[in-house]
Length: 430
Ligand code: LLP
Picture 1 (cartoon, protein in one colour):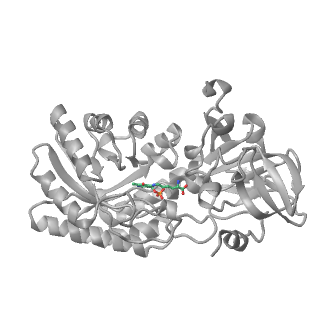
Picture 2 (picture 1 turned 90 degrees about the vertical axis):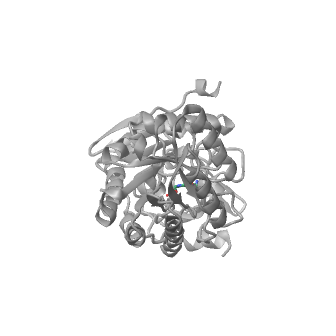
């Protein structure tokens, strides 16, 4: 299906009704996050601003923790994928709830440790870890470094020997499983840069087992992101368990299977919830006698956050009606980069008939849009809009392009809210 068709097909039928499965809801015609009107936050902090619901973040993390504990007991570890949203307050809330972290750089490792996450609950993933980052992870004593190539395994061995620390390693396997999602966020096929094919994983585990400074502890895969079908996850996990069993027969006993992250959310269609996902994969893993690790990002924080933005101008041009907002691709790049659909609601209900508009930002690119061909009630200069389901890969992917300042971030808890990251000031541009 063409992108344009997809966007048109997914037009919200009732754009001003309360959306479901989000902490943002209308009360008396005004959009609230928990007990706080969105307009109050915009007035106090300015726009654009990311607003998160504390209870939503915590309850989604708890759902993972509780279901995994039920399904596999203490051998379960939920490693929140820090890349989805690395705000220190969010990391602290997740640490208090009991999650660990999946990190992908020295910077994310620093943030996870800063938030107080137990190093034994931290996994380090990614294809290009530099020796200095590997050393930081070894010194911190993290649960495992997941290696994605023979060269990287060698680099880990070198750093481990230099530091005289035995390195726990997992191998990320590329299971060659296709999951339906946007091609930029699909990762489980042999043509992708991620992981290694089966035979090479076996060779790497054998060489780790025979190295005095390496200890093989796990097998991992991550087949992609925003996946809403549970089947490919089941296939990947069965593949990993079979491989781990074969290694066991050779005398290489692994502690855990890491099923990666990737569970999608309901941006514009149904998605399974965390419990469904865990219940689909956990029995396969525990039947093999392994611990279960998962690395969810989006499915914990995606729905917890919205981007509030103000209409700067409107204009008509050619066949189009443009709503120009003070947020754009520098604040939320997902629509531009993946043609992603985010529900967008007026902060104050307006029940005039909808019109079809492009909601665009102030950046000098035609690709700078939050939505195209979207049904929206008429809005005017100064009105506020809320871009929902923006808690994951929103602020995390923001940039200073066009001299734009990264937005503020606010956490709502019940009837109160606090700024958890100040809006950048011009000095940040120097
Ligand atoms: N583990 C690994 C090794 C990953 O690479 C990722 C995401 C995750 C876990 C978490 O996946 P999640 O549960 O959030 O789907 N910027 C894109 C998403 C890129 C995901 C990259 N890796 C987006 O906005 O859709």
